[in-house]
Image (cartoon, helix red, strand yellow):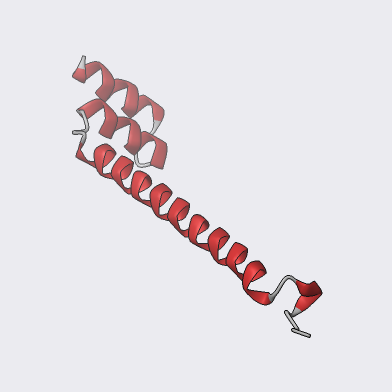
Length: 76
């Protein structure tokens, strides 16, 4: 008689599926990470306009609404 491990299937068969799933998960993670980094690089390369910078300053609270509107008119 030969003993093949758990339930007669052998440990290798179950371990093979687990390794396959882990490898697949790593490949998917690497793809998502690569695409995400490429999107961040594309966004950072885009030049910001003066209006973009003004909107960011207003959103951060560096300037109030009246100053924002005044500077926005100057840019138009």
